[in-house]
Length: 97
Image 1 (cartoon, rainbow, N blue to C red):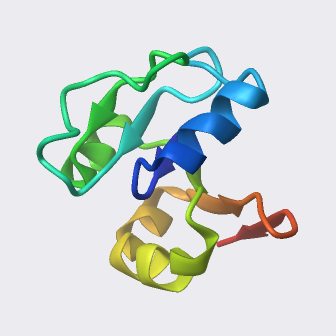
Image 2: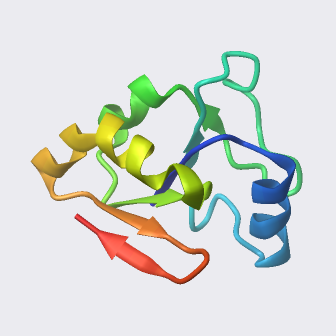
């Protein structure tokens, strides 16, 4: 699983609170070049550019900023080529193709 979306303090806290680390999420993609090639605090999940997602071909992409789910899923529509699905954890868990 890979996560896509703005690496905000809230997203980091949610992952850390739930004990989610690199053993569950291989990478986090973020548009901000200043956050790329770093590790999330606590979870130590590597941050990559969204253009690198195709290299990993994840089965699922976790969209943490749920209010941007339409924008993010639209910009990553090509991931359906390999059957990837989007998981939105809040406000209610939702899986979309």
